[in-house]
Length: 446
Image (tube, rainbow, N blue to C red):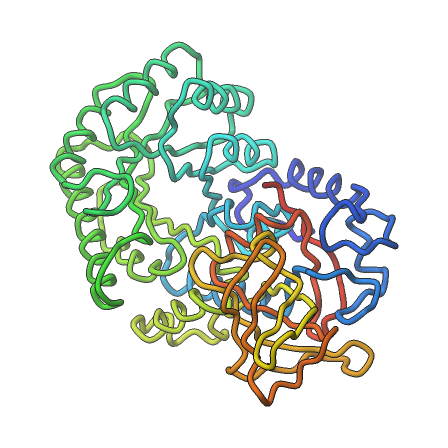
């Protein structure tokens, strides 16, 4: 394992021990996508000689293309170096420690969690900087997280708040314990019609003042999430993101003027995968205190073949710093493969995957490649006329054009839209090289 460039982000010894235990875990047919004849451990599956089209591999099958992931990682490293921004990728995207390892080797500042349980999981993995991009509510959740902080005093946790009631709950819980440090709170600014977060800068400033007067907690920064902004077109959505960022900057400036900060380093954080370049404008804020701007893109490492592909193309068009990077723009590294099982009508076919195997919450998957086992060694592109029209639990309805080469038994590689809701359908995804030879496996913990 390579050393982590930022040793404060994660305890490498603890993390390495967890990775080793995972790789020594037996895996078999009980895990979707694993061949029936494999009886070894997860860490050795890359030595078994499997490849796409191998009759031993079951379908549906989720794969991660190493060559594309490496290029996606390179792009993000270059972006962070060019902008001076820090990255705490959203761990809920993959919940895959082996992918976290790659991100740690690339120099991430910390990791982002979506739930209290994820916070504790990341603590146990060895992470030392964790940003909970959600409200910490519920007595059980609060006590579970505070217990983890007591047991692991080196861990730094940031939690977002958008109400006095939630602050009061956290203060009550924190003051009943002897925590190694005050709990770091980030005031959340939201957008009208969006999700959580205060809608007005004045309300956020009021909450910041309130936190400043409370024991057991520290006001440590401003948070926002822009991915759910609405608009009649993409230009309108981008304008709404910029307005949110302006509100965060206004709030930070007002807090600075009143000396409300209580942490040694101030955190300004926003930026999922679609608009993190626009959120990087938070770097404009200057204070007499050290300031760190943290984006939270989780999907960049695998991206996708539809929604995020479009998002990255637009990102590099609107942002000169991203346009000028040497690495290729991130592309979809996650594919789900299935077989054509039926073609009951000339232009209608069915493939062996469905809602249980692939994301469908944003857009339906796209058939991108095909391979005929025994005749073709490397997949070939499918024409644009092939498309998914509907998904059942275990069936994909396909429109097949007149000139399609597909026959019963052929394999079809589907690109996805929204990696988060494909990863959570697989306990194990196979890694492949550029020739689609299996090189390893990635375990998830959903």
